[in-house]
Amino acid sequence: MFTGIIEEVGRVRALDRRGDSAGLAVDCREVVSDARLGDSIAVNGVCLTVTALPGQGFTADLMGETLDRSTLADLAPGAPVNLERALRADARLGGHLVQGHVDAVAQVLAVEPAEHWTVLRCSLPPSAAPYVVEKGSITVDGTSLTVMAVEGATFSVGLIPHTLAVTTHGQRTVGDRVNLEVDVIAKYVERMLGAGVTTPYSAGGSA
Image (tube, rainbow, N blue to C red; front, side, top):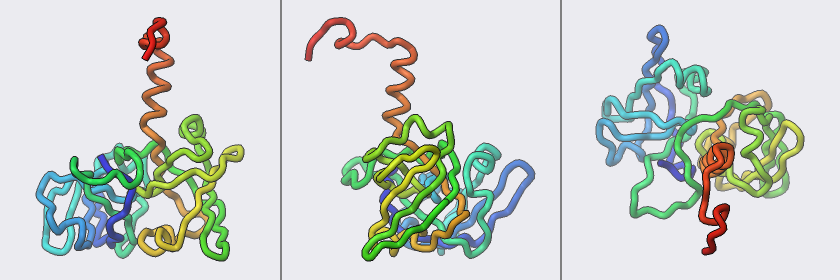
């Protein structure tokens, strides 16, 4: 589990394709300061398992599902990536509950700088649209953000200078592809309602 609060921007050292899988090597310092083999690190919002700690970063394996459902297959040596360690049980939940499971890939449609902040407008794939609401939470490349607006097949988020400085969003350009993760609570609520799960309220109970 993650929070969507980016701890460090790392750099891709290598992405080695191996048929239907790949090996990813990332150079970084902060997120590996206390890492061990088997730990989870989110890379651009994708939860990956540390397979090696070469001293200046980490490596992870990417299976075909990950390559097909996220933007990690697009990475090239030198590319910046948002990094976050898994949430400790005694830590503050600064963003929102993030699983590191990509629900859809969106495209950046506009980057609109204002005087002291920037609006990022992205496409909203149909599979993710039911779970995205104004003032709700969404994860964009691993970053917990608040939805400013939902208009048709697009959504917008606002980026303050701090976010632009400490994440990859400060380098966004039109046409970039980004990983989206919607609020997991919304997905579970939909599943329960669709299955007709009985609750104390639907059964006539009271709190």
